[in-house]
Image (cartoon, rainbow, N blue to C red; front, top):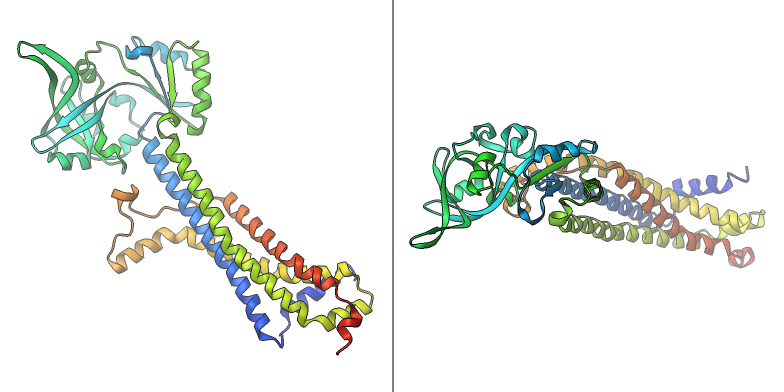
Length: 414
């Protein structure tokens, strides 16, 4: 019975109606504060996870996770034999050759710098590009026809539609009697894509044999691009491939070009977590305030328990139990509310936009037009643990003060 005494009295104090309603109000505010902090934290981190996933799929879906090229930019003569040497690396989900170069794309209305990628449509059937087509098809790229795919926003800027011709200008100059002039080639627009990122206005895709003719590469390709099962394994796999091939080729990965962006997103998520923890910390401070007032209010009860033989440790555990009940209930409400809000935040924002007839998320600014949310169990566990720890820490000082109560002093004026 003595072992369960702190739990019994602590729960009884929590349930009992108090003469001092202000203490009850502070306890309720503390509980609601923790619930609100946990709800907001779970929702915000879920939205940050959603943004991270969407951007990763959009950005890294259009660029190779690992790239292999010959030194000096001379190109690979027999890429199939190199690809066969990569067979032992089971983490490579897909690989394909690419002929890449830079150029200007021009119409009568507009001129734009683009990255030109020569691809084999047969080997690109299950890629982000294939799934992002808004008109036409990747299979419309026919060898020898000089067809081209560009982003839908770029097509709008150029003022062109399917079937129209646009001009590619490559930096390689041609020597003519009039002097050095850039090389021009007309391409027919057969399809558009929309990823929702800068690639929509900075990338163009043509058939690989046409790219080889455009850049005068013969039967060579610029390199081999690889997609992995786990994109975060790219830095390790890059080194393994480089060592396995004996350093014959230059090997790079996506972290070289896009790594800083995702590190910034990760840092932003961490800082957001730390900032929103302050909401829970404020609520925990309210628990401390409520318990301090409770200890003052219950001086006579504490003194009676001490005279009946209760040890200081027992008194301390009584108030720890009472404070933890507030923390546990608040955290539980917050977790339930956070999960419910995180699972429905996309629909809620869409309903708000429809109701107010406004667009809160512009794809031109945020790259996405909806509010994504990905609920990660580890985030929920971390938030729950932090909230309970802060609640526990907040109980220590008031509980310690209660354990130091002297019965004679407390009962002198009763």
